[in-house]
Length: 337
Ligand SMILES: C[S@@+](CC[C@H](N)C(=O)[O-])C[C@H]1O[C@@H](n2cnc3c(N)ncnc32)[C@H](O)[C@@H]1O
Image 1: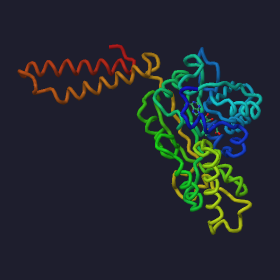
Image 2: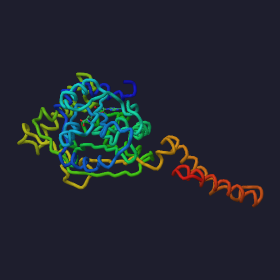
Image 3: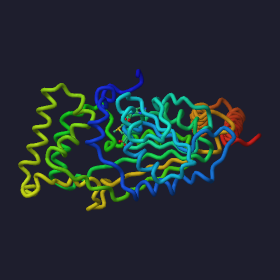
Image 4: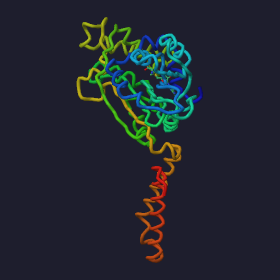
């Protein structure tokens, strides 16, 4: 698919490997999301699904949430990569499954109550995707992101991350770089941004299991065979040489989100609520253009007085600019003027 990042296309190719190597999500995290969604309070004539999941992968999150939802809930899980989607169908046989990328969702406007993206928004964190997500959300609907973040306060977990970093280039998105957050905060099609950290899970397994986990990370899975072997060896060396792991090489605990310190290495939720005020009047893109014009007007207001040929001309100029700015603001919030 043309709009997928290169590392998505080469890094998420094998559903069964991904499925074995990746963590699930905590029950507390899933319960928390359910409490946020508040699906019963939303309504609309065009609603087709209660929940749309983007980048569902093999269904790690899908299977956890669906088991807690009533059967009546209409859940649509989508995944662009074919082999992961095949595994998703195996893991979540009762769920409706589709293929799409975030910036082109095959659903009408205002047709879903909630959009969820688990461990994946960083792959499509663009204004274009947010506009598209907002388009399909009903007014007041929620967009929820969740990530499992590793607790890197544990020295050997940090050493594993150091190895991983050797294989990242600047162009490959990484959730922990928080570039996605800057995109979210710049886009104003959502009324409310909430961020929450919860204690996450502990990921247990042998040395091989832990190394397999790191091998499922897209930048490692994308490597050619020889470089992948080298990377795996580097991960193994970290485990073999860390004195704190001397007694537990066969039953290692990877402290995913174990919340020892007050850092952000917990499960993170970002909840955005789809804004009502701009919906009926204009598209989000038009809204943001309008906001840019208003900023320009306001800048003009603060600089023009005194630059005109006469004080009267300056006063007129100020009045016109002021009126224009008020008029535009009224348009933006849907007031007639
Ligand atoms: C780390 S995986 C997460 C999968 C699953 N949600 C989970 O929690 O295990 C990232 C997922 O994002 C998907 N993805 C990447 N780019 C995407 C895009 N532009 N639109 C939708 N999904 C995308 C990938 O195909 C992959 O399944």
